[in-house]
Structures are given as C-alpha cells and as structure tokens.
Image 1 (cartoon, rainbow, N blue to C red):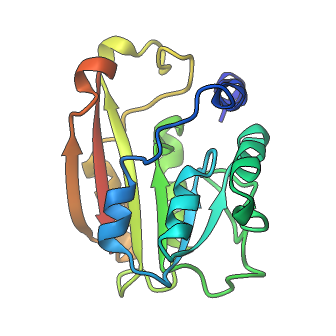
Image 2 (spheres, rainbow, N blue to C red):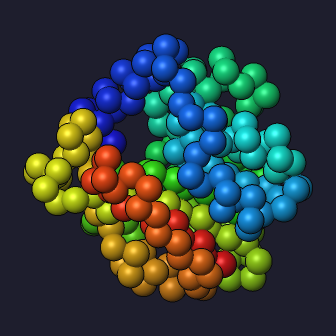
Length: 208
C-alpha cells in the first residue's frame, strides 16, 4: 500500500475504537459454506481481526496477515485469542510467513476486500503468492476472494473517495491468472447490496 492508503487504515483503526465494525462480514457466509471445522486457514489482510475471530469460533484453525500495525493492535486488543496467529506481511510478496507453524501450507486462503489496493501489474504476483501457500492447489485446497467493482464515476486517478489506491480487477482477469496454478473457479456470486449507497458491486470468487 502507498502512503495515503496506509494512513487511511491507521486512522480507520482509531475510529474503530468508537465505531465498531458490523459483527459479520459479507465473506463469512461463503467461508462457512466452503470450509469445515479443523481446516487450517490463512486470512490475508485480516484488518481488525473480525473474520479471524469468527472463523476461530466456528472451529477453523486460523492465522492472519495484516500490514497495518494499528489494525493489528486493534485486532489483538479485541480478540486476545489471536495472539501468535497474526503477523505482518503484505501483498504482492508474502513469502512463507507461518512456515514455522504451518510448514505444509493451508487448506484455504481467504482474501477479502484487499486486491483493489494493488495495481494491475502486481496482481499476478499477488495471486501467485497466495496460491503458493495452499497445501494442495487444485486438489482440495481453496482460495476465497472478494473483489469490488466501484463505479468509475467515483474514482479519480486510481483513488477512491477516501483517497485509497483503488483498482477494479475484472473477475475474468483473476480467473485467467489462477489457471496456471491449477485453481479453477468453483463459485462466483455477485452482490449489489451496497451498489446504491456506495456505488460498488462485490464479487465473491472461490477457486479450488
């Protein structure tokens, strides 16, 4: 993330102390449909830990990555059970951040509302980095993504109204990028729940 985007999330972390997030994200129903208790899951872009805590409560063995120190601090203060499971890392180059705890990788990687902050020339590397962390790409492991499609009228010089870097990545582009990793599209759902209020259509994609 560039400096304005990083500053937004640092400020957002402070605002969360007075205005908590909704108790459930739009990604959680898909996680509950696709994954099973005992699955080992990595949440890329874990934010304030809401989804990690919910997945942990549902019986998943969850780990998370979050580049913002402020957001990680909020996550650990609200969800002490995430201690030791949340580390600093950011796309597109994740490396093997939990190799000491999960040397064989993960049953699933979840990345919700993150990829829009990456420029198109970083997308291939980011998707490859997440695919590389799966235990069995194309043979049981799953990659769950949510990506926005914001009205172009709201974007100015690749920034959204909050000043964050913001790129609309077409689902077809993501599908093509993941084919070399033996990850085929299994589910594609579209939500217009915030289209009128936020000018954004959301796509949820599941690959396996």
